[in-house]
Amino acid sequence: MGQIREPKPCLLVVAAFSRHASALEWAKARLVERFGPIALTSPSYCFDHTAYYSREMGQGLTKLLWAFADLVAADALPEIKRATNALEEEIKADQTFAERRPLNLDPGLLSLGKFVLATTKDQQHRIYLRDGIFAEVTLRFRGGAFQPWPWTYADYREPLVLEFLLKAREYYKQRLRG
Image (tube, rainbow, N blue to C red; front, side, top):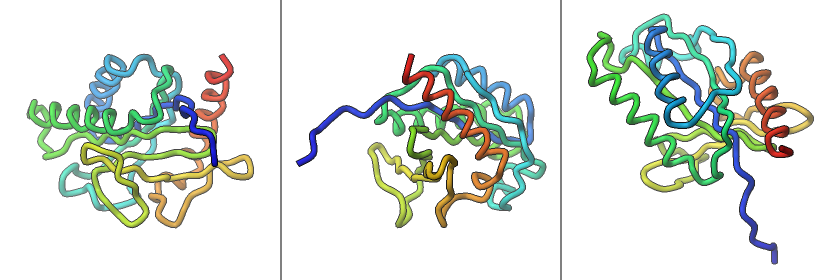
C-alpha cells in the first residue's frame, strides 16, 4: 500500500486572450491583486487556432500566458477557475467592450510532470474536481520536454507555448528548492 502524502504546491499559470490590449492589462492587474506577482510572461501570439471564439470574442485575438511567483496548493484549481470566471463576468458586465465576451482566462497548474488546465466542460478525458470544475492533463513532461496528448488544444502544441512552459518549469524547480 502506498503511503499517503500531501502533494507539493504547484505553479499557477494563467492563459489570457482578447482582441483588446486594455482588457489583457486589466486582467493582469486583477490577477496580480488576487494571486500575487507575475514571475514570467510569455510572448504574445496570434490566437487563430480555432474559430470557436469568433462569435463571442471577435477576430484578431491575442493570447499570452502568465506564471505567478507564489506557488498554490495542488487542490486550488476549482477556486482559481471560479475566480477567473468571475473576472470574465466582471469585465463583461462593465460593458466597455462591444463583444459579448471580451476576455478569456484559462488557469492551469504546472508541476514537474504535467500541465493541467481547468475547465467547466466535461469530456471523456477530464476529471471532475468540485464546484462545477473539471481538470485536463493538457501536457505531460517526458524526455526533457512537454509533450501533447491527442486532445491537447492546438495552441498548447505551439513551440512558443512549449518553450514558455519549459522555462516556467525551471522557475518552478527553483521555487521548490528555495
